[in-house]
Amino acid sequence: MRYLALKLEQQGYRVLVPTLPTTFRSIRECSDYLARALEGHIQDGGVTHFVGHSMGGLVIRDYLSRHEIKGLGRIVLIATPNGGSPYANLLLGFPFSQQIFESLPDLASPGPDIALPRNVPAPEIGIIIGTQPDAVRRFLLPGDHDGIVTAESVRSVAASSEILIPASHRRLHWRADTVWAIVSFLETGEFPALANELTVHELNSILNMYSLPNIIVPTTGGAFFWLDVAESKGWRIQQNMITQHCRILAPDNARVAWGSLEAMNEVFRMITQVP
Image (cartoon, rainbow, N blue to C red; front, side, top):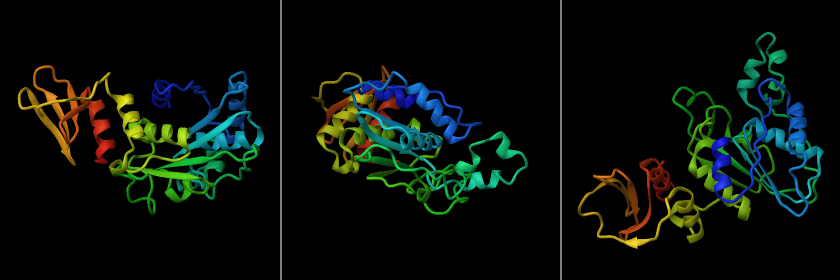
């Protein structure tokens, strides 16, 4: 979650990433750890959002079922096995597995029995679903899944909005489009539209996250010293043959972003929806 924390801080959020013993402790015990970690951090008059990946989302749900939070904002659950995971069922068949991994019964299908949040009205919940497992796990689970958790399992909680992102379970919280989706939901209560329907605000949010400080300026299209690296729907990534830095040109050849190749690839993929 460190990558998400860094990117959310860059968007102006004050972020707390508590260390929880999710591997060897039950959801309830982790929830108690979370309660202690939050002491003194929830401020009167402020808004507190929660973002959790995988079992962390279950810990958040359990915590909110037992604590009423002043200024509770929105909740984002990333690849959270709300309906359990078949891998947990499999592991439970091994001797002493439950004694070592106390969370296994909570992670097994049909998922933990967690009450609704104590806050009234209940907070808006957004769910992020991974749909691109690695090659080894691609055919092991039915329907859309991220290699560990199925879309059906993630959807086993009342959510007001959802988004599918082509990533594996372990990569979901290391992606720029996941950050973009989280920020959009925290600010508006909805996940972003498709890239070909981007609003000016959404496009600016993407560029501000991953571009070096930029003024949108017209160019000649890179006839000299620039090499096209990628092109889609009129948008282009170009790399300077001398300095090796990259830029993104809009269909009208205006430079909208510049920086490293890695950063420009992230922006380009979100703008053009190239997986």
